[in-house]
Image 1: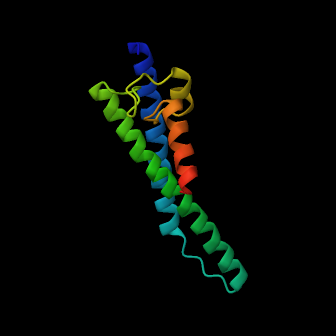
Image 2 (image 1 turned 120 degrees about the vertical axis):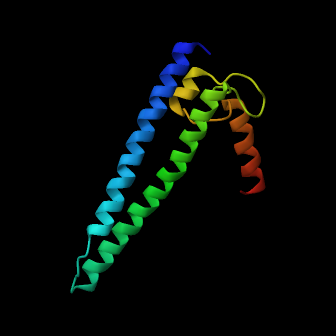
Length: 120
């Protein structure tokens, strides 16, 4: 992979990481500030439902943060863009669609088909 491509993905990943970390900070401050007391049980249930939804989103983002950090580590050690399964280069198009990927499309497709066959 060319140096300019690696720089592009490094910048992309670092920017996305900053966005996610900023959102996480905002969520924590928003949730600690909310001390609302609703006399209506329906309003309280809606608030709890919204909070649970937000926590699920943040959990997914937390997992993405870990993947981004690992992708940045792969950039540093020179293995970014190389499939962990077959050792071939991952296409630029795939990396643009999913910069944290660790597998080429062929290996990922095989893995998903195998998981589907096993019912995972």
